[in-house]
Image (cartoon, rainbow, N blue to C red; front, side, top):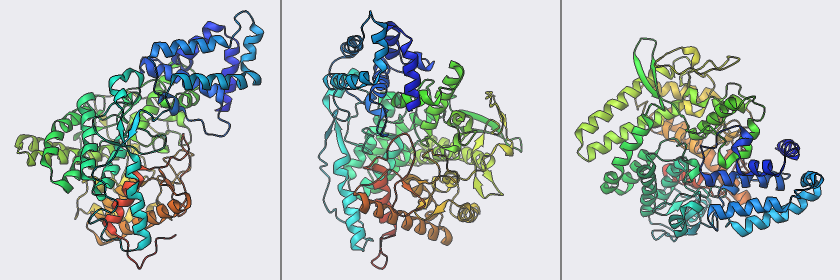
Length: 609
């Protein structure tokens, strides 16, 4: 990133004042990407982000680009933008090229740092100040019937400390966001929000499922219902659940777990009114994922036609929250068209939740070879089958027999497609299917009305997602595939000292080796535990114990819950990614509490590495 600053500075030295202001206010002109993908506020805030990076640098690796697109404006955009232009003008002697060149000298940066920080302080509030603390009315320090199977004193103390974190992560959207939305990238939501924590100051879609699971363990039924209500509101407002509750996330969704969130809350509360409220939104979300944008038709080896789904974000420019990162990634591409294609693939990888991973890369070590939109993912299609089964179940509860029948048929058809296209008998796993040839020197995607299945297009790399069909109901208890999946997992190399590793390749990307993510642990554990096989249950308990010990050890070491861990060592933070490891942490808390509830912890077993 330091090289990017140097190169940009050299380019800017050759420009006059007008060109400088154009670059600051029209960030798309730097990247070669259209700025029509972003709102005027987002475009301006990416200008502030770029300027901050040029002025402040990233010497200690602490620069966070997301901070600058989360800034709430104190005044309307045109007033703030005018002040930004005046700030630039005040540092330039229009009549002196020599002084203009000094803009990028060491003395300029020292001077500019103070001026720039003054500008930010004067015209913006600190990110997160558009949220207020929220008093959870259903919170109890020690809830009744809380984790009855956790007998060990240390384990119980650990669980109660995590339970108490909900008070820290629970927030309310301030009235100013509702009254003056034009000054905020934060989206207004009607209910209490429970955020992941640290730099993630907003609701995230698939994070919320594990947050809800943790809230339910904590007996926060009212809060969990309200949190689900926010997701329903987002679907009713935008037609889908965005990646997160920021305007710059409206170009993509995330793994669709709303129906499973509703089901989890209903299982604990038996609140049928929640099903009635959620049902129209679930139908709307299913229509979103069934649209032509995501749908792929494929004919299997027996000539049977199937319909499957891909991720496909609606963005062809740099992500505002990572503008300087994305433009740096694309800097060596030759044309604006190539850059736009890459930006689309980057955003699509973010839609998958696995941003970033060798799973989506033609060259596993090169992010510029992302082809996420050209891949049919096992997990997405498994989540959608789960959604279809859940909608059929909810339709039955509501007495909607025709919809029950229709969604049962959807789920049956998708199950056939998943087994036909993703299942690999030799490996005993479900494998992502590529719509392009991975080993081609120049990958070119050609949209087809119907693709023909080619087994060579299955990605034989091993990922935890290859086993997600167990959790999502593709593979049912008693299915012969259960024992094959258990046996294959044991031989896969994914299970390390502290849990399930995200891949077997060390690439520097955070959704690869050696990182272990709590949500992936939970899906794998519940999948094997729910398969009702002796081997599967033993494997699930083993993984759970490894994860709980590692989470406890790291909590004891740093006093905080982390977003991810290192699978190689018990009690060590995860690595890589576009940001420093955040703490809080929503889904980490939810997974630990859920595992304690399911398996307990006896006095005979120490919660130590």
